[in-house]
Length: 539
Image (cartoon, rainbow, N blue to C red; front, side):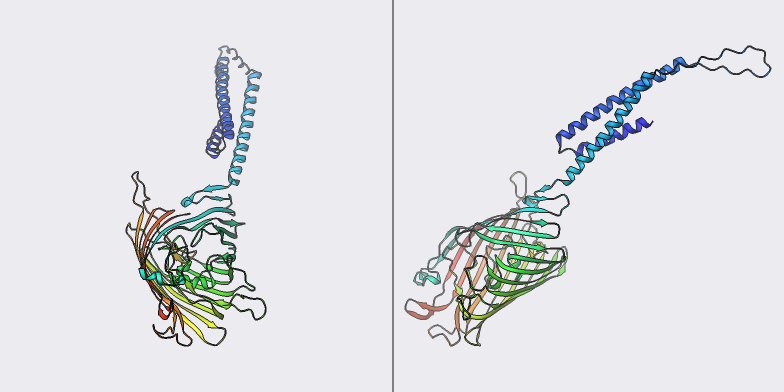
């Protein structure tokens, strides 16, 4: 019985060992050989046991019954004793049992060794198309990240634009460019640390020199708080926090983009404390210059903060409110010495960056300032496949030469409808919404159509302050930065989760007073249209 139990246990161990060692051909082959050897030994033992039983039966005899008391019958002769089992056979059985025990121990040792080796091996995955390697204990990881956006655009301008000065965009260049070409790595270190290193090989207007888009180290051991240091974009608002790969249109809105670049934006040197959970997001940061900024004698110093809350959450309806702002308490010095002062400039591209002249229709110009600020209030919500978002911003620049200050404002609103029924998911790590994931990816071989989205947006950015009227001189203390209004219509296709194709149309209205040729205090704005297409891959 003991032998049979051992053999059954051995067989069970062998059955478990085979799947555990599926990734090790040499060990699996060895275990198969051991299993066959055990089965052969088992068969021999069973045969030898049968032989022993047969010998015992043939050599044995029936014992006679003892006569009752007083009987006169002669007692029968005693039955002969059974012949002993040959010692050689018993020895052979014992040797075979010992061999089976040794094989069982070896099988268990090999199985344990293979299991430990497999447990210590890193794990590869391709979730969402993102190559990721993770240590067996989950304390270390490395994921390859990429975002590639190729834009093609066409600018339709009126004939009257040709007479404008170069700064006012008389002839914008149609064509194509890589808006972004990011490649980086992201992961964890020692369980409580995370990191991100991302390099941009593309360019916002032309494919210029590459540069670091972000590189940072973060301590996560204070959860739900995290402390981050390096170069990154400190969270300033809802539109700012939306990933570059998740924007609904080709570019963020001009009011939000002007706010984020005052003290934040990609590649900003900063230290930040962040709070995140499934419904609330908070961030406060100290920032300096951007990595790609030109040299300064003393870097800009600023504070940035944001609070956001998902104050209603359900399967069909989510409502989010966000408040953010920044304060530059020391502009970057532009000259050496104690008197070296700095300037502040607010500007924004017309929500498309295909033009290689980098024209910005509205701008405050460089203003000598001791400090500046901005704040913005935004809200967003989705109900099933419908999504809406909007925000209002205020900007201020205090003059260094006087106690006067300039004030500006901007706002935007947008809405989308996903025709295929998906919804925009909320990303708790950023406090913003992300791209929809197609329920049925596109495929010509019996698949679906992916996800399709219609979108519309209006934005108004006003950098005028006491600008006066056409035909008259600029009032004292006024500034003519211009007023930009843009209507944008778009259709987005998400064939699979890692690919997005965007097509958009813009109607742009620029209203700005300035000088045209020799005529002063006249209109230097223009009306134009743009058509653009973006192809994006991200994971």
